[in-house]
Length: 211
Image (cartoon, rainbow, N blue to C red; front, side, top):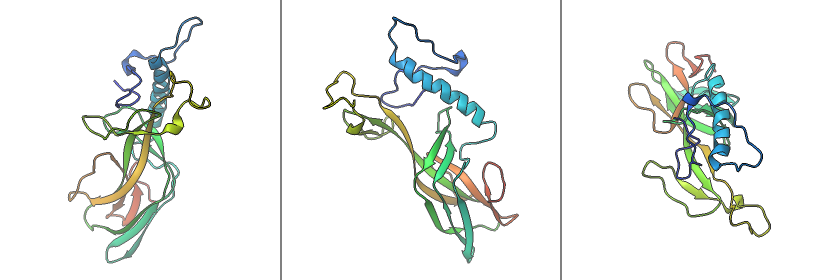
């Protein structure tokens, strides 16, 4: 099963890929369920994911400027600029095109002569609610934050029965590197590029093409 998100307010999304539900049909005179509105998004996201997997893997850079240069002594500097990256979060079967909002800079990366040096990006999954209380991550749930600007836009927030929807947010929060065989990929991280010691070039992790 692949749901909208695995958080404290999942929208009661019980969509299952095995059902092959492709569209939702709403009928006049019948109320719409909250889970149906959520499942519409999940159906669309599953279709996008299936198409993306034809040519992308989690960590594929879409349109960010990427550059790494040697600075001497076996060390390199580099950066990954603003743009989109494709991510399939851990333990989920849906993929998302996440925008890198700020350039991630790397300095003094140790490039090994025998093993790949891997560059990765770390992401966070957050549930944003329009009301209620924030909660720290724990017990299998992600952190919950509150943004009251998301409340119903009726003047003075008079519609208390409809405060608004929760949001599922993915943010790129950091970058790092490790040498294969001497380190491991952190939790909630995706490999994006690596240094190939055989060709002495930086390559994209998904295509093995030089940067």
